[in-house]
Length: 118
Image (cartoon, rainbow, N blue to C red; front, side, top):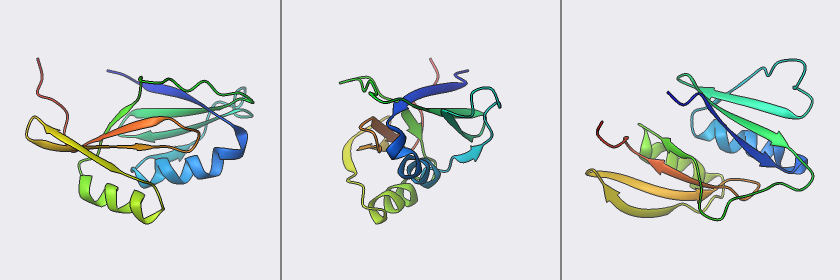
């Protein structure tokens, strides 16, 4: 089980990032006090996104988190309603997929369902 992914963001994007991850069903949870000054945690169903505030964030060109959104159409609508461009991609495993860009520049894949287990 993957517990979390850490994404670097500029401090100026923290609140927009919080709204983005909340729109995808993640809830802000407390980070440990010793790191809470520069990292913000979000959690949904045991998986966490850690937003690390840095002056010069590293954003990969290709690597990205993929989020399963069981309420896929509602999640897309929330993001589009908040002004994010959501690009629908070809379906895989018979389910819709899309991609968008989170505040700070990270590409995020949205999936209606995960692939079947190997």
